[in-house]
Length: 122
Image (cartoon, rainbow, N blue to C red):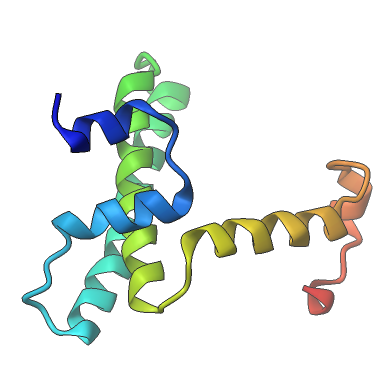
């Protein structure tokens, strides 16, 4: 077993994932092009997820968890690339998002808080 495959048998932190994802980033491209490719990549992969769910809901297809898992992984890769290019730790982004959600929904999700939330406070 290689050290890389050993690393993948344990749970990864976001920081570890972000670091490992850089192995497959295209470092030949300039930073502006990488940023554009990563942003478009998030949109493209999210579109593939949406299309698969649409086919499940509206076209009678089976919901393929394995396919969705792979597409979610692709979204995560592009998010890691964006985070790296912006010099922001993916773990810090995840934590800030959780803190924002705790403020928005201190008792957990509620429709009332969702409908009446003040977006300026975010």
